[in-house]
Structures are given as structure tokens and as C-alpha cells.
Image (cartoon, rainbow, N blue to C red; front, top):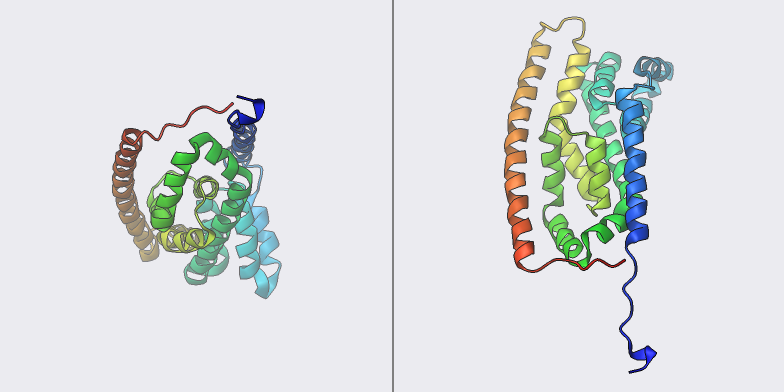
Length: 242
């Protein structure tokens, strides 16, 4: 057998995995700065937006979408929308901001982490995941939005890296973010009187959303474990290509 007859060496996955690790580290750094260290002053943002006059709602949609993408907490941004625009217009401003954040983070996640995610999973697992995404990606996005305690931006980066189509991200974020958009915007609009009926309505919606989210998370985890066992039984174990 000559050298030309040797089987081709599989390409190394290491560069893609390293790139994915760097991307994750970058996101964690952003999360610390925006969500924990609070380097962005949302009160200053509100004042700047209010100064734009009639264009303030559209300005806030764009600014809030960008701030959400760098992990400024969504409830704070939504409350600011309620303070500026009231519960009705503010809810729509918050909702479209959430959709903007979802689309932006998904695109960044796809371009920066898609190859690394596929390399980490391996070809077989990645193809199987792609099939699941095409069939259930929309409802995965919707369900994630109902689960309390999960950063929407961080989840959207992950959804993008795992190949969720942009239209699924937009529609899923619109549907799944609607209840919480109302909750936090209404609470922001009621900040001066938390005993008002609007505040009580917002708290009730939050409780229902949290219960539905916990139930959806439990069912999603059980379904994921079932699919993982099926993949293992089918021998979907990738050799390590270094």
C-alpha cells in the first residue's frame, strides 16, 4: 500500500473547540460586567432616551436590545420601559426589545460558536441535534422564556450556536417573552404604587408563568435525557479527532 492509499486524516477539532471556549469566556466576562458589576447605569439610559422626544419608543427598543445582548438584566430594562411609556406602550417596547436581543445574540452565537459547538458534539450528535432543532427549536425558545432564573441573552447565544434558525428565535422570543414583558413593565409603571391592581395583576401573571416554566423545564429535561439514552444506544459516540 502506498502513501496515497492511506485513509485521510480527519480534521482537528481543537481550533474550533478553543474558539468556542474563548467565546464562552468572553460572554461570561460581559455577564459579570453588566449583570453583576452593573457598569451600565440604566437611569442614565432612560434620561438619554427620554431626550429623543417622539422617537423615544423606537430609540428604547434599539438601545434596550443592545443592552440586553450584553447582559444588562431584562427586568431592569423592562421596568425602565414601564416608567417611560406606561404599561401598554411600554409592554410592546419591552417585547420588541426582547425580540431584537434574541435575534442579535442568536446571530452572534451562530457566527462565533456554531463550528465549535458542532466540533464539540461530533458529526453524528450534531446532525441529530440539527434534526431536533428543525422540529422543536421554536418551542424550545418559547419554553426557555418561561423558565425563571435563566438569562435570555445567554440562552439565545446558545440557541444560535446550536443552529436554531433566526425566524424561530424571533417568533419564539415574541411568544415566550410576552408574559414577562407585561409583568416587569407593569411593575415599572406601578413603581409608585405597588398596591395598585396593575401591580397585583403583574404578580399573578408572574406566578402563573413561573409554574408553567417549571413544568416545561421538567418535561424538557426528561425528554432530553430520553433522547440522550437513545443516541448512546445507537452508538452515536464520536472518535476524538485531534
